[in-house]
Length: 288
DNA sequence: CAGTGGCCCTGTCTGC
DNA sequence: TGCAGACAGGGCCACT
Image (cartoon, rainbow, N blue to C red; front, side, top):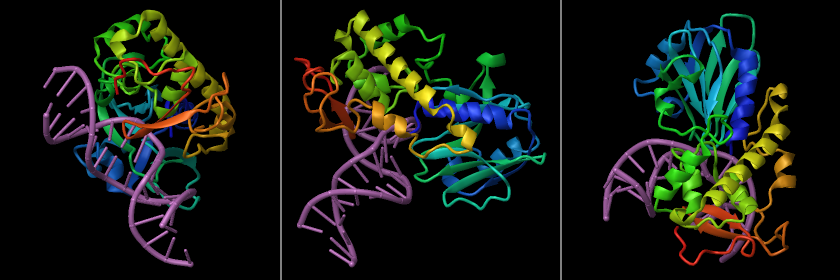
């Protein structure tokens, strides 16, 4: 599942291969891939064709390409989305959802998505210069690796919430880029339980869980940083890196790397939550 | 209005 | 062997 590190690898690859090129043709192959573009596929094609890509930007799990029109092509990979650079000669992939060609002899950009939770849209950019953000991304908080992310502001917002800590970490309006995998790993590193009521989290604990999220995402980023050179990013974003590094996610029944207690998996928010029952004891008042 | 649960989607795996 | 059901889960939307 692409979370912040995986999306950043894709962004860096696109920056290298697509920036400064001009779109010559767009082919939408599946309607769900553009369902977030309210004006429909023909309108999206019209807004892209003839436009030059001027940058590749990201906030959290959203990726966008500012265009010379003042708009941007916004992409979200969802559960299984991929953006690939492919020779025009290459055969269509089974899950090819959209294709973007350029007016030079270089390779094309393809959007693939098996489970179709992801999608493309063209949106107006709000703001100027590098700080500009597409309208559809404006409601998302800065991500934890953004140098401008404000830990104190996050802490104050956290304390006004009445929910569980993991829910808050997954809430992209508080901090973006963290999904189920990194939430579980960050909570384990910070020794905090997922059902900890947000209004009881103190400032050092909030700092701990943010630092933990940053550490695990930076490690994943460093490990995944070369994959785009092969013009391919794995569907799951799970390279061999995860098998070696994940302490609790997907490790139910296996010993906690810190204390040896078997890792527990619990259904939570219609998802899996993994934690060490000894390192991360359940709070007296648990908030799910 | 904040918080919560349901739903979308398809390929893989498990159990009967 | 075959089939039904569980599971994976980000984000949107309806409901309380």
